[in-house]
Every structure is written in C-alpha cells, then in structure tokens.
Image (tube, rainbow, N blue to C red; front, side):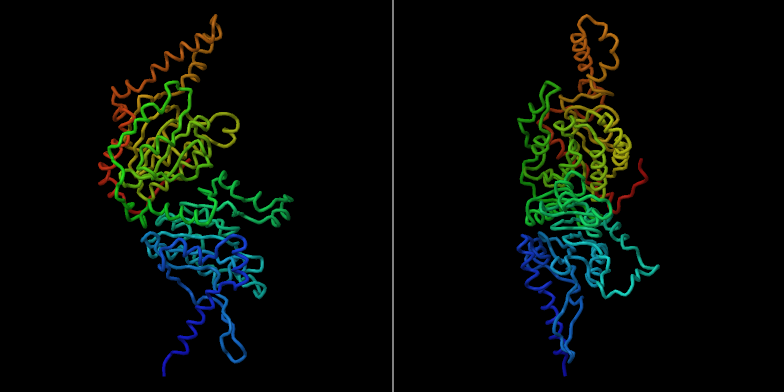
Amino acid sequence: MSWEKEAEEIRRRRMLAKRQGGEDAVQRQHEKGRLTVRERIARLADEGSFRELGEGAGVPHFDEDGNLVDFEPANYVLGFATVNGRRVAIGGEDFTLKGGSPNPAGLRKSVYAEDLALTYKVPLVRLHEGGGGSVAGSGGKKAARPLGDPVFSTPRFLSVTQVLGEVPVATAALGPVAGLPASRLVASHFAVMVESAQVLIAGPKVVERALGEKLSKEELGGADVHAKSGVVDNVVASEEEALGEIARFLSYLPDNVWQLPPDVAATDDRNRMDEALLSIVPKDRRKPFQMRKIVKSVMDEGSFFEMTRRYGPSLITGLARLNGRSVGVIANDCMVYAGAMTAEAAQKLRRFSDFCNTFHLPIVSFVDEPGFMIGSSSEKAATIRHGTAAIAAVMQSRVPWASIIVHKVFGVAGAAHFGPDAFVLSWPSAATGALPVEGGVAIAFAREIAAAPDPDALRKELEEKLAAGQSPFPRAEGFSVHELIDPRETRPRLCDWLDWTAAWRASELGPFRTTMRP
C-alpha cells in the first residue's frame, strides 16, 4: 500500500497547469509578439532557479467516474527565483487565461505576492499583463452575489504599501495593464513599460460610456503618454529589454532595508581625471552644456542607469557606481528650461530622494539650478508647493549627500540640492546668489536702465559687475564650501568622500521614517 496514485495525480495536475490557457491561447499570445508569464520568468531568472508556489492552486475537472480530466490553474504565477545570483520573489498574470483578469485562485496568489516578499525580506518583481476584477467578479458568471471580504480582513493595499518601505520593488508593464495591476505597477520603486503596452485606469469602452471620450488604448494609456506622465520610469522597445532593466536596477540595491547596497569589484581607476571636464562648461554663462556627459565622466564607466528621463526632464535622476559602490545621482539639465525646477521635476526629486533614503544610497548632486520655473503655468501647477515638499524631503535625508556646484545655484530651489551635512564641492564655473544676474539687474536697476542714454550698455555693465560678485572664490575663502576644485578632480574627491561615509551609512539601517511635508 502506497500513495503512488495520489502522487501521480499531483504530477498530472502540475503538468496540466503548465499548459496555461492551452495551446491555442499560448499561440495567440506569441502571435501578438508577447511572451507568456512563464517564459518571462525564465528569461529574467537564472537558469533553473525558479521555484513556484501554489502549482496546485486552481480548479480540477473530473469525469463521471471521478477521474481527473483537466485542470484550470490559477492565472497568476508566483514563486522564488534568483536573478544574477540574488533571490527574489517574482510573479505575474497569465494572460492566456481570462486575459489576465484574476480567477479566484489567481487573485489569492496575486494578493500574496507582497506578503511573500515582506516575510522573506527579498526584492519583489512583478510582470504585469492583465486587468483587474470584472463586473462578474473573480468567479465569473457563476458568482451568485458579491459577498466581498469580511469586515475583519486585512486591507489588500496594506502589504502593497508596506513592501515599499522594506524591500525593492520592480515592475514591468508587458501588455495591457488595467485596474488593480495598474495600481500595483506604480506602487513600485522602478516601473518599466514596453512600447506596445498600455496602462489604464479603465479601458476605452468604459471611458466612452462614462465620459463620451472615444479614444484607443494607446491614446488613453500608451507608452508615450506614461513616459511623460511619470506613471512609468522607463520605456523600452522589447520585453527582453524590460527584463534586462529590472535586473540592472536590482543590481544597485540591497535585498532589504536592513542591508547596505552590495559593492562590486571596481574596474575603473578611482583617481581617473577626465581632461574634458576642464572645458565642458562654457565661459559664456548663457551657453548650455551637456550635464549627462559630466555625470558619465565622473561615475564608474558605463555604470550610469538613468530613470524617469521624460518626466520632469529639467532634472536628471538615476543610479550609478563610484569605485564599485552604488549611489543615487541627481543633476540639472540646462538644456530643458535652463534646469529650472518645475512642479513635475520637484515631484520627481521628492520620490527619488525618498527612494535613495529607503535603500541607503548616498546621493551625488550635480548642481546647475536657476530656481523655480516661473510664469502662469508654473503657478497653476502649484510649483511652489511641490518644490517646497521636495526641499522638505531632502532635509529629511538620512543618507550622505555630496553636492558639486557645477554652474548656477539661485533662489529657494537651490536648497533642494544640498542634504543635511552635505559635502559641498565647487567648480570655478559656479555662480551663486539670490537671483540670476540678468533678473536681479532688471529688478534692482530698472529705473537707472530706463533713464540711461544707452540702456543696453548700462545693463551689460551692471550684469558684468554683479557677475564678478558671484564668483566661487570668495565662498571658498569664507569656507562656505568644503573645497573649490579643478573639475578634473571631481571623481577622486567623491571616491574619498564615499570612503569617509562608511560608518555613517552602516549606522542608519532599517526602515526610513518621515514626517508630513508641505
């Protein structure tokens, strides 16, 4: 007497579950140019490392004699895997079953994903393609009435919120993503979207019925819409690229907030000094320059991973390494609004600062800040509120900051680039003050300029005189910066600074706490 019959049924159920929605449904998925969720997991995970949880979750079908003839699996696949040798919790909707809209077992596994990551203190990867609930409920047409969850049940979004404060969360939109999956997509530290995907609160039919707007999925929530809206951080051409970006993003981060980010073997000379930095900022303060070239020159070669480029584009944010150590990078892009802080850039900065503080990433700030964006559109966007909230986020930082004044620092917005106890370096191209010279002269000397025989000549004379007063040398002489440096020295100076911060970073492990912000 043995349990061989039962063991054989377990094996059969597992085999049937691997068919997903069946051959025809899988073929349709491939014809759309999309992988199945199991194929996606296999592409991202180290070979053979995926260990599924809940393989037996689903609905069995029996013949009249009680023999198992079919098995409809949960349409959310969940389990553990390793990515570049590091364990993660990973899951995603199976679009070949009900278009990813959850069946009862799929919903339970989906909801459990965050709890799994929280319990085992590992990063969470979500691979989304599917909708939320349907009007018929997760049980379909068989549901007699919408019973709902009991009043004593744990709110579904509690773990979705908690996970953001404890482990890295990276999510991909790999097809149509709507409802609950769309909300979970943005409840991430990093969200990437393929060009062919859509992210929607509600689909075109619902929108047309409710609002009379007749729009396609792409017009409502396509990649171009959400790269600019800030719903996703990055947009890529293919699923393979999306999975690659998730793997790269995780490589900069610890498994959880009780660990420091992992160091990698440095292959770039810490004392490397790039000659191009000496002339990259033009002497003519009105001429723009390429801030990304500065960032890439200073950081370890090839290590800069930019995030959220098309949202709040006057501010650059991303991850990088310095001498093998992970850092967060912020920088002004003078090619967009002269680098001014817009409402979107401020929200981008606040979120990125909180992210770096959550996972113990020192922040390196390359400063070229002319101030808050001005004008009626800026006022309507509540730029001053969002900007002040960003400053508050920076002031609540627990991680070390290094700020390099590359060019301009003017107005209140300048405070958003210097964390508490920041290590401040200045380039000789730096200019600081309450206002840019041009605006200050126009305000302070308006009458004199208007009355002058040659207004343009007087304006130029006054601007040149005041510009000399914004020189970085007096600030260095008064110890208002830690050091005025040759731009070529930036990388070695920052590598030294990171060495000094080792004890600081090790003393701040655990969850990051903040107070209310404006």
